[in-house]
Image: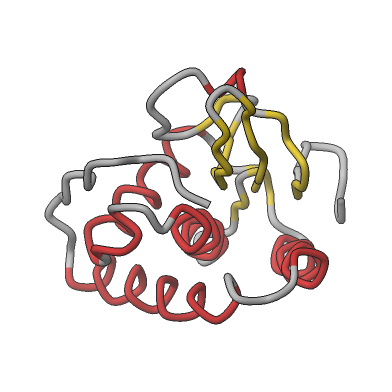
Length: 143
């Protein structure tokens, strides 16, 4: 699953944020290799008891993830999205996690969304058909 062609810019991070972002990226790597149903189940469990993330929280987590990982800054959208969810969870929030595709031209992609908005994504995400997602709302405890 890939979409971005150019690597995203890194931002300066505090020592603590750098370490936690690296840990999230390291844990996300093997999780991204799981079959889709199992990955979805893991992300549901990770999100239990968490509040929905705001756009600012999800955006900050995504920027931290791409700052510590060249793979996540480039074409590793699945690992980037999973790492973003994990990093947000460390602060008590969870963004929506989505995977999907578009047909003209065909592209598969994984992303996070907060408050109904894709976070940090370039291009028209409305063209993507969501196939698999783990969504959080303010009223649900385990979606």
